Length: 368
Ligand SMILES: O=C(O)CCC(=O)C(=O)O
Ligand SMILES: [Fe+2]
Image 1 (cartoon, rainbow, N blue to C red):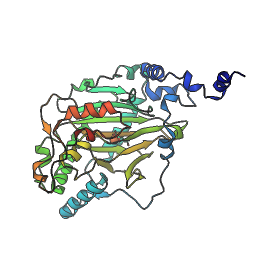
Image 2: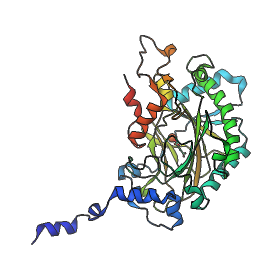
Image 3: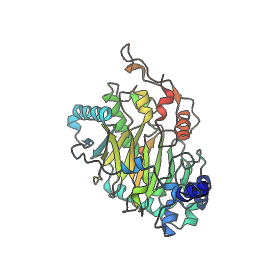
Protein backbone atom coordinates (compact mmCIF):
# COMPACT_ATOMS: atom_id res chain seq x y z
CA UNK A 1 0.00 0.00 0.00
CA UNK A 2 1.25 3.44 -0.86
CA UNK A 3 0.99 5.14 2.51
CA UNK A 4 1.58 8.58 1.12
CA UNK A 5 -1.22 8.48 -1.42
CA UNK A 6 -3.64 6.97 1.16
CA UNK A 7 -2.77 9.71 3.56
CA UNK A 8 -3.48 12.23 0.87
CA UNK A 9 -7.01 10.85 0.58
CA UNK A 10 -7.85 11.43 4.23
CA UNK A 11 -6.12 14.73 4.63
CA UNK A 12 -8.32 17.64 3.73
CA UNK A 13 -7.08 18.45 0.26
CA UNK A 14 -8.61 21.89 0.60
CA UNK A 15 -5.60 23.22 2.46
CA UNK A 16 -3.39 22.29 -0.49
CA UNK A 17 -5.72 23.77 -3.05
CA UNK A 18 -6.33 26.94 -1.18
CA UNK A 19 -4.27 29.91 -2.27
CA UNK A 20 -5.48 32.49 0.20
CA UNK A 21 -3.48 35.39 -1.22
CA UNK A 22 -4.86 34.71 -4.66
CA UNK A 23 -8.46 34.54 -3.43
CA UNK A 24 -8.08 37.72 -1.41
CA UNK A 25 -6.73 39.48 -4.46
CA UNK A 26 -9.51 38.15 -6.69
CA UNK A 27 -12.10 39.40 -4.19
CA UNK A 28 -10.38 42.78 -3.88
CA UNK A 29 -10.16 43.14 -7.66
CA UNK A 30 -13.94 42.90 -8.03
CA UNK A 31 -14.14 46.30 -6.22
CA UNK A 32 -17.71 45.28 -5.43
CA UNK A 33 -17.15 44.21 -1.82
CA UNK A 34 -19.23 41.71 0.13
CA UNK A 35 -22.39 43.23 -1.32
CA UNK A 36 -21.08 42.16 -4.74
CA UNK A 37 -20.92 38.52 -3.56
CA UNK A 38 -24.44 38.67 -2.20
CA UNK A 39 -25.70 40.21 -5.42
CA UNK A 40 -24.01 37.41 -7.33
CA UNK A 41 -26.13 34.99 -5.29
CA UNK A 42 -23.56 33.22 -3.09
CA UNK A 43 -25.21 30.75 -0.70
CA UNK A 44 -22.00 29.47 0.87
CA UNK A 45 -19.43 31.98 1.93
CA UNK A 46 -15.95 31.95 0.35
CA UNK A 47 -13.20 30.57 2.54
CA UNK A 48 -11.40 33.87 2.93
CA UNK A 49 -14.25 34.80 5.32
CA UNK A 50 -13.96 31.75 7.60
CA UNK A 51 -13.11 32.74 11.15
CA UNK A 52 -11.25 30.28 13.38
CA UNK A 53 -13.93 28.32 15.31
CA UNK A 54 -12.92 29.77 18.69
CA UNK A 55 -13.79 33.22 17.38
CA UNK A 56 -17.13 32.32 15.83
CA UNK A 57 -18.38 29.93 18.50
CA UNK A 58 -17.81 32.48 21.19
CA UNK A 59 -19.54 34.95 18.87
CA UNK A 60 -22.82 33.43 20.00
CA UNK A 61 -24.54 35.62 22.49
CA UNK A 62 -23.37 35.13 26.03
CA UNK A 63 -26.28 34.78 28.36
CA UNK A 64 -25.53 37.69 30.61
CA UNK A 65 -28.75 39.60 30.62
CA UNK A 66 -27.84 41.07 33.98
CA UNK A 67 -25.17 43.23 32.36
CA UNK A 68 -26.18 46.31 30.44
CA UNK A 69 -23.91 49.09 29.24
CA UNK A 70 -24.87 52.39 30.92
CA UNK A 71 -27.48 54.61 29.28
CA UNK A 72 -26.94 58.28 30.03
CA UNK A 73 -29.54 61.01 29.56
CA UNK A 74 -27.86 64.21 28.36
CA UNK A 75 -30.94 66.41 28.68
CA UNK A 76 -30.72 66.44 32.42
CA UNK A 77 -28.54 69.54 32.69
CA UNK A 78 -29.75 70.25 36.23
CA UNK A 79 -28.06 67.07 37.33
CA UNK A 80 -24.76 67.97 35.64
CA UNK A 81 -22.53 66.69 38.45
CA UNK A 82 -24.42 63.41 38.41
CA UNK A 83 -24.00 63.11 34.63
CA UNK A 84 -20.25 63.70 34.98
CA UNK A 85 -20.15 60.93 37.57
CA UNK A 86 -22.06 58.53 35.32
CA UNK A 87 -19.71 59.29 32.44
CA UNK A 88 -16.71 58.69 34.69
CA UNK A 89 -18.07 55.33 35.84
CA UNK A 90 -18.98 54.24 32.30
CA UNK A 91 -15.61 55.32 30.86
CA UNK A 92 -13.62 53.57 33.59
CA UNK A 93 -15.63 50.37 33.90
CA UNK A 94 -17.12 49.82 30.45
CA UNK A 95 -15.40 52.08 27.93
CA UNK A 96 -18.86 52.14 26.34
CA UNK A 97 -22.16 53.87 27.02
CA UNK A 98 -25.28 54.95 25.17
CA UNK A 99 -26.55 58.53 25.21
CA UNK A 100 -30.16 59.62 24.86
CA UNK A 101 -31.53 63.15 24.45
CA UNK A 102 -28.24 64.02 22.81
CA UNK A 103 -29.69 66.78 20.65
CA UNK A 104 -29.36 65.13 17.21
CA UNK A 105 -32.87 64.91 15.72
CA UNK A 106 -34.20 61.44 14.92
CA UNK A 107 -35.00 62.64 11.44
CA UNK A 108 -31.31 63.37 10.81
CA UNK A 109 -30.32 59.94 12.13
CA UNK A 110 -32.85 58.23 9.86
CA UNK A 111 -31.59 60.19 6.88
CA UNK A 112 -27.98 59.26 7.62
CA UNK A 113 -28.92 55.57 7.64
CA UNK A 114 -30.95 55.95 4.43
CA UNK A 115 -28.13 57.88 2.71
CA UNK A 116 -25.51 55.28 3.60
CA UNK A 117 -27.81 52.48 2.44
CA UNK A 118 -28.35 54.37 -0.82
CA UNK A 119 -24.60 54.62 -1.39
CA UNK A 120 -23.97 50.92 -0.82
CA UNK A 121 -26.95 49.81 -2.89
CA UNK A 122 -26.01 51.75 -6.01
CA UNK A 123 -24.89 49.88 -9.12
CA UNK A 124 -21.38 48.62 -8.51
CA UNK A 125 -20.02 50.66 -11.42
CA UNK A 126 -20.77 53.84 -9.45
CA UNK A 127 -19.28 52.58 -6.18
CA UNK A 128 -16.17 51.14 -7.84
CA UNK A 129 -14.94 54.62 -8.69
CA UNK A 130 -14.49 55.21 -4.95
CA UNK A 131 -12.78 51.86 -4.26
CA UNK A 132 -9.27 52.42 -2.95
CA UNK A 133 -6.70 51.15 -0.44
CA UNK A 134 -4.86 54.46 -0.35
CA UNK A 135 -4.95 55.36 3.34
CA UNK A 136 -4.44 59.05 2.80
CA UNK A 137 -7.53 59.41 0.57
CA UNK A 138 -10.25 61.39 2.36
CA UNK A 139 -13.17 59.72 0.66
CA UNK A 140 -13.05 56.06 -0.30
CA UNK A 141 -15.00 52.85 -0.46
CA UNK A 142 -13.35 49.63 0.67
CA UNK A 143 -14.21 46.17 1.83
CA UNK A 144 -11.99 45.19 4.78
CA UNK A 145 -9.27 47.81 5.26
CA UNK A 146 -7.12 45.03 6.76
CA UNK A 147 -7.96 42.39 4.13
CA UNK A 148 -4.36 41.26 3.63
CA UNK A 149 -3.29 41.20 7.29
CA UNK A 150 -6.33 39.93 9.20
CA UNK A 151 -7.01 36.28 10.07
CA UNK A 152 -10.27 36.31 8.13
CA UNK A 153 -12.10 38.74 5.94
CA UNK A 154 -15.17 40.29 7.60
CA UNK A 155 -18.69 40.32 6.19
CA UNK A 156 -18.72 44.09 5.73
CA UNK A 157 -18.14 46.96 3.29
CA UNK A 158 -17.27 50.52 4.32
CA UNK A 159 -17.40 54.02 2.91
CA UNK A 160 -14.89 56.36 4.63
CA UNK A 161 -15.47 60.08 4.64
CA UNK A 162 -13.02 62.36 6.44
CA UNK A 163 -15.06 65.40 7.51
CA UNK A 164 -12.55 67.52 9.46
CA UNK A 165 -10.06 69.11 9.52
CA UNK A 166 -9.44 70.21 5.92
CA UNK A 167 -12.43 68.47 4.35
CA UNK A 168 -12.28 67.89 0.61
CA UNK A 169 -14.60 69.96 -1.62
CA UNK A 170 -18.20 68.70 -1.06
CA UNK A 171 -18.42 67.33 -4.59
CA UNK A 172 -15.87 64.67 -3.64
CA UNK A 173 -18.32 62.99 -1.27
CA UNK A 174 -20.68 60.52 -3.00
CA UNK A 175 -23.85 62.22 -4.15
CA UNK A 176 -25.96 59.45 -2.54
CA UNK A 177 -25.15 60.70 0.98
CA UNK A 178 -23.20 63.95 0.55
CA UNK A 179 -25.71 66.40 1.95
CA UNK A 180 -26.81 64.38 4.93
CA UNK A 181 -23.24 63.49 5.96
CA UNK A 182 -22.27 67.16 5.90
CA UNK A 183 -25.33 68.02 7.99
CA UNK A 184 -24.66 65.14 10.39
CA UNK A 185 -21.06 66.29 10.76
CA UNK A 186 -22.25 69.66 12.11
CA UNK A 187 -24.43 67.91 14.70
CA UNK A 188 -21.53 65.67 15.61
CA UNK A 189 -19.33 68.71 16.30
CA UNK A 190 -21.89 70.04 18.79
CA UNK A 191 -22.35 66.69 20.49
CA UNK A 192 -18.58 66.20 20.54
CA UNK A 193 -18.20 69.50 22.44
CA UNK A 194 -20.65 68.29 25.09
CA UNK A 195 -19.06 64.87 25.42
CA UNK A 196 -15.45 66.05 25.56
CA UNK A 197 -16.53 68.61 28.16
CA UNK A 198 -18.10 65.91 30.30
CA UNK A 199 -15.14 63.57 29.80
CA UNK A 200 -12.68 66.32 30.77
CA UNK A 201 -14.59 66.94 33.98
CA UNK A 202 -14.87 63.21 34.61
CA UNK A 203 -11.05 63.18 34.58
CA UNK A 204 -11.03 66.03 37.09
CA UNK A 205 -9.84 68.54 34.47
CA UNK A 206 -11.05 71.87 33.25
CA UNK A 207 -14.09 71.33 30.91
CA UNK A 208 -12.19 72.55 27.85
CA UNK A 209 -9.05 70.50 28.53
CA UNK A 210 -9.59 67.74 25.96
CA UNK A 211 -10.81 70.09 23.22
CA UNK A 212 -7.88 72.46 23.94
CA UNK A 213 -5.56 69.50 23.40
CA UNK A 214 -7.07 69.01 19.94
CA UNK A 215 -9.03 65.80 20.59
CA UNK A 216 -11.88 67.22 18.53
CA UNK A 217 -9.78 68.64 15.74
CA UNK A 218 -10.72 65.92 13.30
CA UNK A 219 -13.46 63.41 12.68
CA UNK A 220 -14.08 60.76 10.09
CA UNK A 221 -17.18 58.73 9.26
CA UNK A 222 -16.93 54.98 8.74
CA UNK A 223 -20.20 54.18 6.99
CA UNK A 224 -20.59 50.42 7.30
CA UNK A 225 -22.84 48.07 5.39
CA UNK A 226 -23.18 44.49 6.67
CA UNK A 227 -25.08 42.47 4.05
CA UNK A 228 -27.34 39.61 5.18
CA UNK A 229 -25.04 36.60 5.58
CA UNK A 230 -26.03 33.10 4.39
CA UNK A 231 -23.69 31.36 6.90
CA UNK A 232 -23.38 33.71 9.87
CA UNK A 233 -21.81 31.12 12.18
CA UNK A 234 -18.72 30.80 9.99
CA UNK A 235 -17.72 34.43 9.88
CA UNK A 236 -18.06 37.79 11.58
CA UNK A 237 -19.35 41.24 10.61
CA UNK A 238 -16.56 43.13 12.34
CA UNK A 239 -13.81 41.22 14.12
CA UNK A 240 -13.03 42.18 17.70
CA UNK A 241 -11.01 45.37 17.91
CA UNK A 242 -10.46 48.58 19.84
CA UNK A 243 -10.82 51.93 18.09
CA UNK A 244 -7.54 53.78 17.41
CA UNK A 245 -9.05 57.25 18.00
CA UNK A 246 -9.88 59.50 20.97
CA UNK A 247 -13.62 58.85 20.97
CA UNK A 248 -16.23 57.20 18.76
CA UNK A 249 -19.88 58.15 18.39
CA UNK A 250 -21.67 55.23 16.80
CA UNK A 251 -25.06 55.20 15.17
CA UNK A 252 -26.58 51.77 14.50
CA UNK A 253 -29.83 50.77 12.84
CA UNK A 254 -32.34 48.32 14.31
CA UNK A 255 -30.72 45.02 13.18
CA UNK A 256 -28.33 44.59 16.13
CA UNK A 257 -25.19 42.47 16.44
CA UNK A 258 -22.79 44.83 18.22
CA UNK A 259 -21.14 43.32 21.29
CA UNK A 260 -18.70 44.70 23.81
CA UNK A 261 -16.28 42.75 26.01
CA UNK A 262 -17.13 43.35 29.64
CA UNK A 263 -15.66 41.34 32.49
CA UNK A 264 -14.77 38.55 30.04
CA UNK A 265 -18.26 38.32 28.58
CA UNK A 266 -19.51 39.49 25.23
CA UNK A 267 -22.46 41.74 26.01
CA UNK A 268 -24.97 42.85 23.39
CA UNK A 269 -25.48 46.55 22.83
CA UNK A 270 -29.06 46.27 21.63
CA UNK A 271 -30.41 48.92 19.27
CA UNK A 272 -32.21 51.64 21.20
CA UNK A 273 -34.27 53.95 19.03
CA UNK A 274 -32.82 57.45 19.09
CA UNK A 275 -29.77 56.53 21.17
CA UNK A 276 -26.17 56.93 20.09
CA UNK A 277 -23.36 54.74 21.35
CA UNK A 278 -20.19 56.35 22.65
CA UNK A 279 -16.93 54.53 23.20
CA UNK A 280 -13.48 55.49 24.44
CA UNK A 281 -10.70 55.00 21.89
CA UNK A 282 -7.06 53.94 22.38
CA UNK A 283 -5.75 57.51 22.21
CA UNK A 284 -8.00 58.61 25.08
CA UNK A 285 -6.88 55.59 27.09
CA UNK A 286 -3.29 56.68 26.36
CA UNK A 287 -3.69 60.35 27.30
CA UNK A 288 -5.80 59.50 30.34
CA UNK A 289 -2.96 57.20 31.45
CA UNK A 290 -5.33 54.20 31.64
CA UNK A 291 -8.00 56.01 33.70
CA UNK A 292 -10.43 55.52 30.81
CA UNK A 293 -10.55 52.26 28.92
CA UNK A 294 -10.65 51.49 25.23
CA UNK A 295 -12.55 48.23 25.15
CA UNK A 296 -12.78 45.45 22.57
CA UNK A 297 -15.98 45.19 20.61
CA UNK A 298 -17.19 43.33 17.54
CA UNK A 299 -20.22 42.83 15.31
CA UNK A 300 -21.70 39.39 14.68
CA UNK A 301 -22.64 38.39 11.15
CA UNK A 302 -26.38 37.80 10.83
CA UNK A 303 -28.88 36.22 8.49
CA UNK A 304 -30.88 39.41 8.79
CA UNK A 305 -29.67 42.41 6.91
CA UNK A 306 -28.39 44.63 5.63
CA UNK A 307 -27.23 46.25 8.85
CA UNK A 308 -26.09 49.84 8.60
CA UNK A 309 -23.97 51.71 11.08
CA UNK A 310 -21.92 54.90 11.03
CA UNK A 311 -18.97 55.15 13.39
CA UNK A 312 -17.73 58.70 13.80
CA UNK A 313 -14.16 58.57 15.02
CA UNK A 314 -12.59 61.67 16.51
CA UNK A 315 -9.08 61.60 15.08
CA UNK A 316 -7.08 63.54 12.54
CA UNK A 317 -6.13 60.35 10.71
CA UNK A 318 -3.11 60.97 8.49
CA UNK A 319 -3.19 64.78 8.56
CA UNK A 320 0.36 66.12 8.54
CA UNK A 321 0.62 67.48 12.08
CA UNK A 322 3.52 67.26 14.48
CA UNK A 323 1.37 67.30 17.62
CA UNK A 324 2.48 64.65 20.08
CA UNK A 325 0.07 62.94 22.46
CA UNK A 326 1.16 61.41 25.75
CA UNK A 327 -0.34 61.02 29.24
CA UNK A 328 -1.86 64.31 30.47
CA UNK A 329 0.55 65.90 32.99
CA UNK A 330 -2.25 66.87 35.40
CA UNK A 331 -3.13 63.20 35.80
CA UNK A 332 0.37 62.12 36.76
CA UNK A 333 1.85 61.82 40.23
CA UNK A 334 4.31 59.68 42.10
CA UNK A 335 1.58 57.07 42.53
CA UNK A 336 0.49 57.41 38.96
CA UNK A 337 3.58 57.59 36.74
CA UNK A 338 3.22 57.84 32.95
CA UNK A 339 2.44 54.48 31.36
CA UNK A 340 2.89 55.48 27.72
CA UNK A 341 5.33 57.35 25.55
CA UNK A 342 4.20 60.21 23.36
CA UNK A 343 3.05 59.52 19.82
CA UNK A 344 1.88 61.24 16.68
CA UNK A 345 -1.67 60.21 15.76
CA UNK A 346 -0.56 58.96 12.37
CA UNK A 347 2.20 56.80 13.87
CA UNK A 348 -0.36 55.25 16.19
CA UNK A 349 -2.57 54.50 13.20
CA UNK A 350 0.25 52.93 11.23
CA UNK A 351 0.92 50.55 14.14
CA UNK A 352 -2.78 49.79 14.45
CA UNK A 353 -3.20 49.06 10.73
CA UNK A 354 -0.08 46.92 10.53
CA UNK A 355 -1.59 44.58 13.12
CA UNK A 356 -4.96 43.98 11.51
CA UNK A 357 -7.99 44.67 13.64
CA UNK A 358 -8.37 41.15 15.05
CA UNK A 359 -5.04 41.26 16.88
CA UNK A 360 -3.88 42.65 20.20
CA UNK A 361 -4.18 46.33 20.89
CA UNK A 362 -1.57 48.59 19.33
CA UNK A 363 -1.35 50.36 22.72
CA UNK A 364 1.18 47.73 23.77
CA UNK A 365 3.75 49.26 21.36
CA UNK A 366 3.55 52.56 23.19
CA UNK A 367 3.88 51.28 26.77
CA UNK A 368 6.83 52.62 28.72
O1 LIG B 1 -20.84 48.64 13.18
C1 LIG B 1 -20.70 48.73 14.38
O2 LIG B 1 -21.65 48.68 15.17
C2 LIG B 1 -19.33 48.89 14.97
C3 LIG B 1 -18.36 49.58 14.08
C4 LIG B 1 -17.04 49.76 14.72
O3 LIG B 1 -16.76 49.21 15.75
C5 LIG B 1 -16.02 50.64 14.11
O4 LIG B 1 -16.22 51.16 13.01
O5 LIG B 1 -14.96 50.81 14.73
FE1 LIG C 1 -14.98 50.00 16.58
